[in-house]
Amino acid sequence: MSTSDPEERFTRLVRLGRDLRRLGVGTSLVLPPTGHPVLEIRLAGETRARITAVHRSRGWVFTGRSGRARPWRSGAWVWAEADNVADVIASAVTP
Image (tube, rainbow, N blue to C red):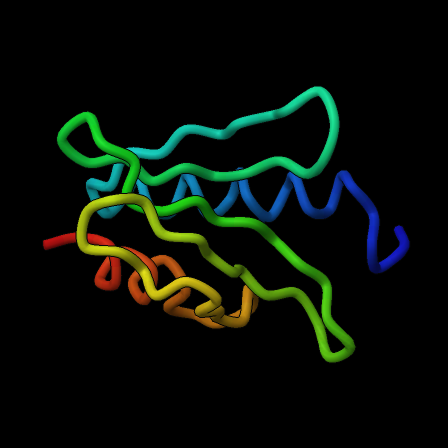
């Protein structure tokens, strides 16, 4: 599997969605007809953040774009391999 493999990107987002669900955070995986998949974090019917998986020179990271409510800082990122990645993202987007 190459480091920019689209299936790897998809798998990482699915796993993150599962881990966030275990923390009580609702997510939706968006698969656009073109471009990369996005994991939307939703609370109270509102999109709080849109997370993408990006491969950088030292490994995979999750990076986000905020929604309208208390946002995860736009351009923020966390290593995808971090043991507490779901906790970090959940605490950044939940009230």
